Image 1: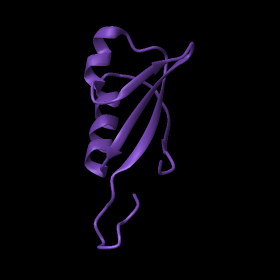
Image 2: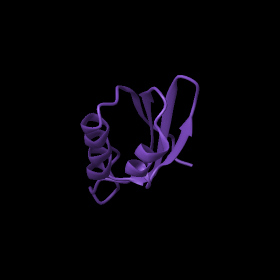
Image 3: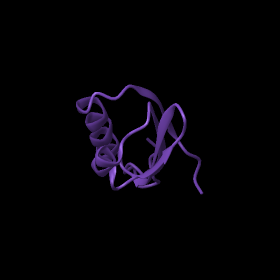
Length: 77
């Protein structure tokens, strides 16, 4: 996680890919994220997520039994 000049963690944009397509009812579990359905995966994008928010989303993915494919920090916009 990038650090600001004052030493505090900075919020970042993230892209999270999970295997399979998430149904409409399960998308509600990720309502703070944009959700894109691709043929073989679901892409979640979050803006200005701090570390605690990112770990919370990853915990939800695990608790719902989804297979995590990739997590990447997006370049600043």
